[in-house]
Length: 124
Image: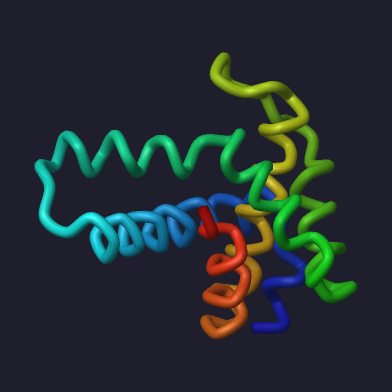
């Protein structure tokens, strides 16, 4: 979808937020098995927090293509971002960049690249 590149970065982040959360949920279920919904939710929340996503960027920044880096930066530098109390503005902006990147890749149907990047982020 060539149009994805033209979308507002916060629109990309909106899409990427759900993509990222589904990946986290899948990995938790794969690694932890059957747990109570309350425990699954708590584990998910820890991995979708802005601080964790911001750390994720540090893990993938050296392997991003120029286009991916540009999408990340567009998301990170978006205006109208208000950080929640649980994250610094820097962490929240970086997390928005990650979400924009995942949204962009998803809308371009690049699931292989999404999985490559998420594998790097997920490492313990």
